Amino acid sequence: MPYKGEVASKHGHSEILSNPDVKNFLNSCIDVPKPSIEELNAHFRSAKQLDGYDILLPDLILAMDGSSYESPVDGRYPSRMIGYLKISTVLLDMAKYENVKRSTTRFIDPIHVAKLQKETGAISLALPGAFVQDPNCGSVKESYRCAVQNYLRSPETELGGRTLYNTLVQLVRYLGRVSLVDSVECIAFKTCVNKVCSEETPKNPIFVGVDSGVGSCSLCGEKVYACDVLRTHEAFVESGSNIEAYNRLMTAIEHLLNAHYLYYLWKENPDYLSRMCILMDGPLAIFGQSAHLHRAIMLLLDDIRKDLFRRGLHEPVIMGVTKTGRVCEHFSQIDYLVPRNTVFPISDEYRYKFIEPTKLGSEKNFGDETYYGQDIFVKTNKGRQFNLCLSYPFASKRIDKFRDEKVNLKNYAQLRRALSVIQTLESELYENSMIPVVLAHRHASISLKPGGKVLDVLSRGAFSS
Ligand SMILES: [Zn+2]
Image (cartoon, rainbow, N blue to C red):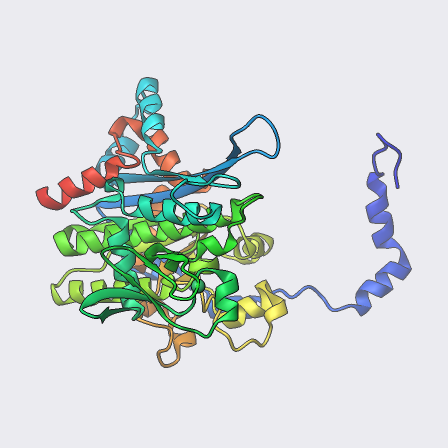
């Protein structure tokens, strides 16, 4: 243990490594797993072989990014707590972006930037936290569930007359949980939301009307909200920090919003949708209690893909970009082995061998319960690395040879356009994880409409193009 202020000697490290005992010991140990050049060559495919990807840029990029906060309300403890979620969205017109890039002036009007910052949080949601109880609710937890439902049904989330709630019901429909009970469309819950009741009683399904959005358990009387299908309340605590529940909810809403835009544009203007790229910060995956919704999103995307194909249109590019995590760490460690201008779909075999060796030999699909996209490592010709996650071109993971098919790049018709987005935006994507905020701030002069305004822009765009 060094004394305070004492700095470890820089020589210590090399002295230890040159010690013959240590050397012998290390030589007897198994080396860090890393791929050989041959193994990498077998996996890598040069992006150059994907002819003409640079001219296939989508016309519009809709970028999304969420953040969450938790804050005490009272100046003393124990304090009531409030949660706050914000989802920033920016619609970027690539033709205008290219013009700005080509122009020599990079001047951004500071007043415009300040205005943008104010507008960025337009899609936002305040949530009850510890000790915050709505007088109309039986508990703090119910107050939280009720607030989530009220938000999803609020006009703020409306797009073409449909709220986020309608889109959530649509996803639940894909999961086969909506049926007619006495001529009323209902969502089925296998168990009660009251944990004690669900553990003690036989599994009686509870039906919640889609229109009313509220039902109740016939055994304990607990109210059941339709939005409880998100299940984020399971991580909610009545007297402590709820950062986990808020983060789970934020991710679920981000992906729900993705489905909301897609569904709306598909129904209103498929041509507009086919020229679009939806760019999310992070993988195309829903973690935690809401993870089951990823299956519904896969089914929705498949319906959209097939319908656009019938109309002679291409599917939109749906992608996530990640710059942290194990995949990125792995590739930055072996950067010297990886040639520039390459694209590398990460197979489960490769991942379990080199990236997550604790899962070596596992037969389970990576992200089986969570992902609706495939991780593809990209190293650009400028040497920048990205973990791109591109939506699976399949309705489900239960298809023949899914494990092989998901890493077959020929199945990803939108790959070239995804690569062109990365190549065009690489400096913006590289610098900051707050993609929409960066885009908005950097290109304020070409006026992107952030936050809730995007809903208006999309509505107008869908009708005017
Ligand atoms: Zn009950």
